[in-house]
Image (cartoon, rainbow, N blue to C red; front, side, top):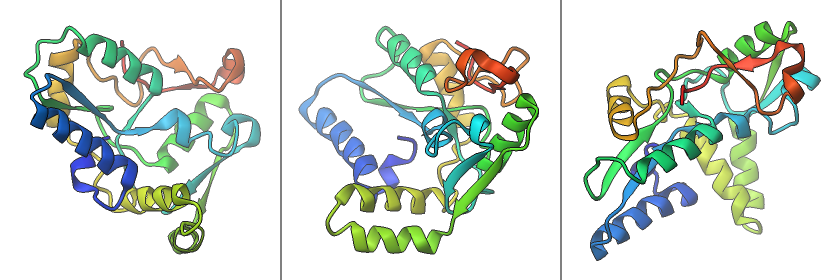
Length: 201
C-alpha cells in the first residue's frame, strides 16, 4: 500500500511493509508494488452508486487520495514479473493525480446523467466505533485506523513518484478524465453510459 512504511497504526498496511523488510533481510529478490486506495472497492461499499445515487465514505469526502483500480493493479503485477527493476525496489502505483471522493462522485454522476451524493460518516463516529467494537473485532479497529490515515491526506503520492511506475511496468498512468474511459466494473453492461477514469493498460 502506498505510504505503508509510515503507518505503524494501520495493521494491514504495516504488515505489508514488514513483509517487504523480511524478504529484504532474507535476501529474497522481490519487487513490491505499493498501490493507492482501491477505488472500485471503496466506492461500492454501500452497493452500486449509480443505482442508489449515493456513495458512502468515512471522514471528509473532500480530501484527495491516490486511487487505483484492482484490475489495473493485477495488470501491473503481471508486468512487474519481468520488469527491469532492482531487487527490493518499491514502486508506487496510482493515477497521475489524487482526487477526492466528492470529485469521483461528480464525474461518475456526470457520466451517468444523474446526481450521486456522498454520505460521509463523521470521523469522530468512525473513531469511536473503532475504539469500542475494535476490542472484539480487530478488523473494525484496523479499518478505522485506515480511514483515519486517509484523512491525513498523506495517501496522495506525487506525480514524480509515479514516473517510475511507467518505466518499470511498461504502462503509463491514465488521467482522471481519459479520452477513452472504461466502464465502471459495478455497472452492468455500462448501462446509462457510466464510465470512469482509469489507467491505460
